[in-house]
Image 1 (tube, rainbow, N blue to C red):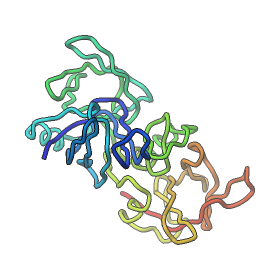
Image 2: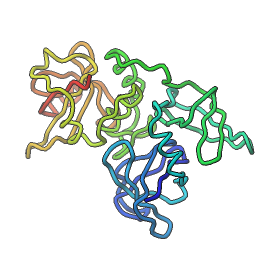
Image 3: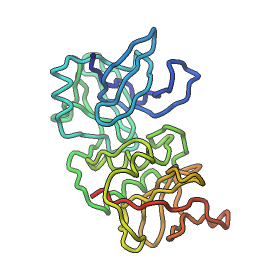
Image 4: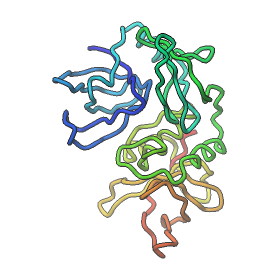
Length: 258
């Protein structure tokens, strides 16, 4: 097995090794991966921090020695806090633009490095994050009005579970990628009245399959990605869209992650 790290700001992870294939997820700069197969210009990989596989453009992955991979894997994650920021390659002064949520491996004294390359980071990080519910809410609100993108996890395109996963990751808490898998972890809250802002609420379809997730806000509101990241009313029945004058999502389960 080979070991790698995403070396571009965002890499679309596809279901099959083809540009026309569905995007299942997005990798961000600094994501660690296990390389399972290389086919022409495509690399199949498995995410190192959670159980998810996809195909990416081979050029988007930098192969690492196992020792460096293991060292980075064991580090406390440092992520980009700003919506946008920059890296400058100290060898050739090339600039790489990053987005909120990108990882900074081996981060020290304003520099990040991997695979023999070192970059100066210009921006702010979550290096001193604390796992407080009010911080979860504040981070989620920073994605407000981001457009919906199936498989996306950046402020420039994000889906419902990408919003919840990345919001929690920015505070050092790793949860699965998909809503149906996220709904299997954490502590169940029996009633909406017992939930706290920052908790996650999951919604199912007519077959009982969890298909949607959002983050509870104060005053019986929820932030979720539906068309774009938006705020709607929430009650025991589900999400109520005032602009549609109807409920659009039926509550299945409420989960507390910490």
